[in-house]
Length: 159
Image (tube, rainbow, N blue to C red; front, side, top):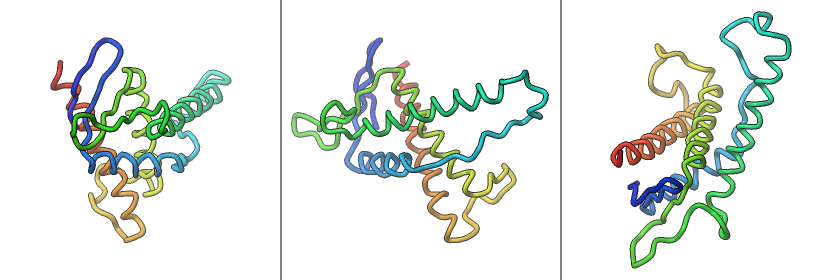
């Protein structure tokens, strides 16, 4: 993944065919990923009245926006991916800065959903699946990390 151009409004990334397929798989998985209920690091009774409900509603709104963005990535009309021109292989991915932030957040939500499926292992947990049933979640987490890293690295290289 390479950042081809950017301006105040748009960023254009070049994805090779392998990266397009990885993104396609992550989008498909991301559209069906479900998160558990919101958990807090502090006791809910320590919060002002209604704060937990407000926070839950804001999180659900953010998650819905992320799912909507994932749905638009591969839409034939008006989607974010365009076939490469001039004989180049792969696709162009054109995003506004807010869309890029939303994509990164949607990918993070996907990663968290699979982390929850694994039982929310702490940092001391082994860095490998404990069973074959855990393997798909580990793979999703790893692929999301890679895609996020590529997007952020491409942005950092142009600063």
